[in-house]
Structure formats: structure tokens, C-alpha cells
Amino acid sequence: MSHRGKKSNVFIAGFITVAVIAICIFFKFKVKDIKAENDAGDKKIEQLENELAAEKQRTEELETYSKYVNTKQFVEFMARNKLGLVYPNEVIFRPEDD
Image (cartoon, rainbow, N blue to C red; front, side, top):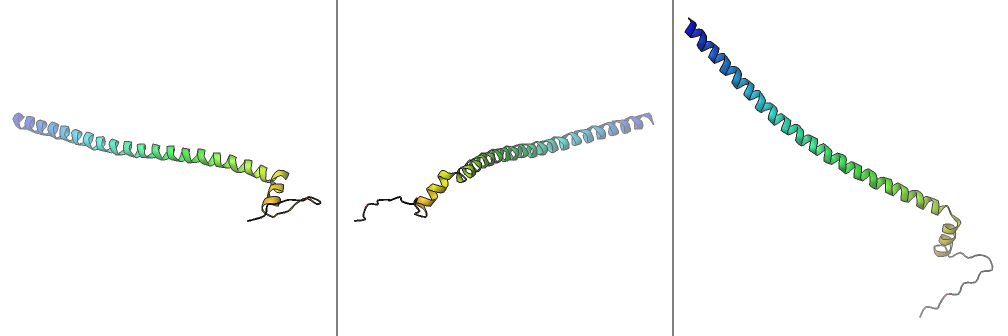
């Protein structure tokens, strides 16, 4: 009977060892997948941070342009070049087209 009990104990110990190894292998691959997802997430974060920086730069440029648009200098430029307006009593000489 004791010989049979030893075989049973060896079988149980072997089964537990195989089960632990299988669980370790499973978690190794799971950790690898999680690291890959983490790396992809890091790349996405970096991309979004770059986009955010570009948008902040664009916002600053638009704010600067908005301030310029509200100046007398801009209004005068647009009136002269786009609308062809001049100040009263102002004479403009343009070359003749050949």
C-alpha cells in the first residue's frame, strides 16, 4: 500500500509541476501581449502630444493673425489692394498696360 501511495504522490507532484509550468508559460505570453499593447499606447500618446503641440502652435499663429486683422494697418491694406479704395484727395498713378 505504501508503494502505491508513493506513486500517487509522485503523480500528483508531477501534475502540479506541469500545471505550474503551463501557467508560467501562459502568463509569459500574456505579459508579452500586454507589453505590445503598452508600446502601442505609448506611441499613440507620443503622436497625440505632437499633434497637440502643433495645434497649440497653430492657435498662437491664429491669435497673432486675429490681432493683426483688427489693426488699422490691415484694414487699410485690404481696402487698397482688394477693394481699390483710396483716401479722399489721394491720387494714384498706375503704369499703362502695353
